[in-house]
Image 1 (cartoon, rainbow, N blue to C red):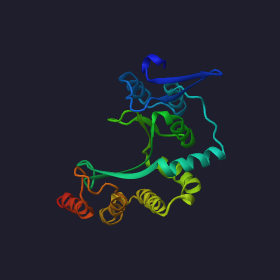
Image 2 (cartoon, one colour):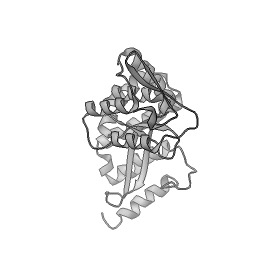
Image 3 (cartoon, one colour):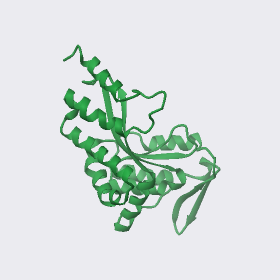
Image 4 (cartoon, rainbow, N blue to C red):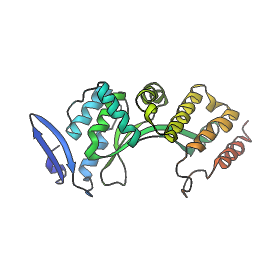
Length: 232
């Protein structure tokens, strides 16, 4: 990428290293640069290929993974990371509801190097442009297996011991939901209603959001009961 992609990007070039260091405050990424991020995420590349794409798009150098960088990222996740469970209706599923646990770190493009560190640390995930923002990026991990086998062990060692009590409780709920999925609780109507949905409800952050799929736990539970009424 060159300055022609976005005149407000300032590129530092020294010692044969290229690094995007700043985007002026309030400036929106150009459509051309957004398209380069979209292409970066296209297809199903190997991790090595995807990592290479990220470095090329954002002009990053490889990062070193060691104990120091683990603790740095752990502290960063404590402040900027989030684990959540989204819910939406899906008539193709057994109970009409899809629960999607995910882990993400949101950061302005000026902090993309930290998102790249997370990518290299977990060896999975995607860095995407946050639609509707000026220049915000989101590092996201969605596959449950990756969350359970890569994210949770890292959080347990480098984040959880130093987290605030409220965030510790959130992490425990997040991990419990993943464990329940691993036990196939999402395939059992009673467990789905009485174990998984209460965890989703407890983890909800925006309870007053008008466009939320379900306003409360009872509404979600009633939906499952009515949806499966003629099917089971």
